[in-house]
Amino acid sequence: MKTAITEMFGIEHPIIQGGMHYVGFAEMAAAVSNAGGLGIITGLTQGTPEKLANEIARCKDMTDKPFGVNLTILPTLTPPDYPGLVKAVIEGGVKVVETAGRNPVDLLPPLKDAGIKVIHKCTSVRHSLKAQDIGCDAVSVDGFECGGHPGEDDVPNFILLPRAADELEIPFVSSGGMADGRSLVASLAMGAQGMNMGTRFIATKEAPVHENVKQAILAATELDTRLVMRPLRNTERVLNNAAVERLILKEKELGDAITIQDILPEVAGVYPKIMTEGTMDAGAWSCGMVAGLIHDIPTCKELIDRIMLQAEEIIARMQAQARA
Ligand SMILES: Cc1cc2nc3c(=O)[nH]c(=O)nc-3n(C[C@H](O)[C@H](O)[C@H](O)COP(=O)(O)O)c2cc1C
Image 1 (cartoon, protein in one colour):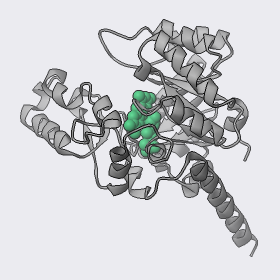
Image 2 (cartoon, rainbow, N blue to C red):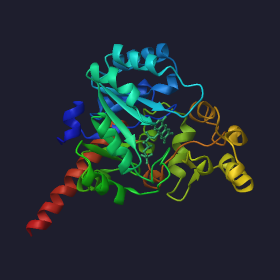
Image 3 (cartoon, rainbow, N blue to C red):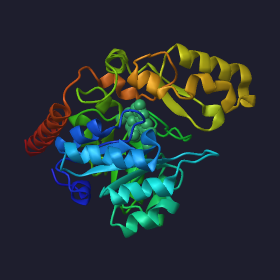
Image 4 (cartoon, rainbow, N blue to C red):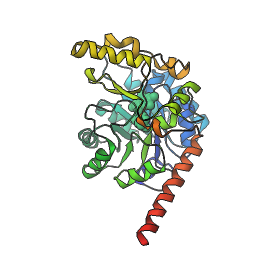
């Protein structure tokens, strides 16, 4: 299937694996790219330019297909070395960067000069238009369903995607709640040129995370995620567990007086414990409502092939129905 996104990124299928902390290692990105999608290494999981350069080199050893790097711009007092990370991306010959979080305007000039395509992840139409204005090549539109940070507007994709289509001139992909061929056809119907998946790609054979994480996703239903950190205006959709229940209790008790210090035990440094060690109650970790649609652990190729087959079957069936 050819779309503006497959053409822009030089990929076979319009399917992207979004950056994921402690999931988006070289193994994950290479598996998705080898299956014809766009795999993405998570820059901040590596943390330093040297480590990111090494991860990019490892990924190149595993695939000769295009892959990307995610640079998440966090509101923090001690920011990572973003110019150094950008340099590692450019020198590593990476052709696509997924930016997320704050406005990526400061990162754009060196990336654009190097001919790198930038797709910015946005949770609202106004941020998508801003991304277009500052020169991003594409947008990943993340609805309220998404795992990770859905923003503060709470607009689900059935509204957000057609709204984005009505306003944007650059291509965009849907993100949040996407799992199968139905998701892809619906995204295309609403004006997207492809789809981005996070949670679905964690439950694959190649995802370099502990088996407990994959089993937790399989066991979860669409009712099992919670929104945390809303009082801090840093809302995150996570899978419910004992640590999340503790966190939510603190939010109720402390109300507007809550600070990040109050919840550090539940959110700081928990990803290696969960993703690598499989200690599932170690803290709050991002997971989408789409867990309710995930029932198996295929390889990335099996997953992507079956999405494309199902999408093509749905389109053919609809065309046949229209002619009947
Ligand atoms: C475990 C996990 C970690 C994530 N970490 C990041 C991250 O570091 N940076 C980022 O931009 N998005 C991150 N995301 C968001 C994903 O890239 C993607 O936008 C989101 O998962 C889409 O929603 P879905 O899970 O319903 O597919 C993360 C998502 C998950 C599930």
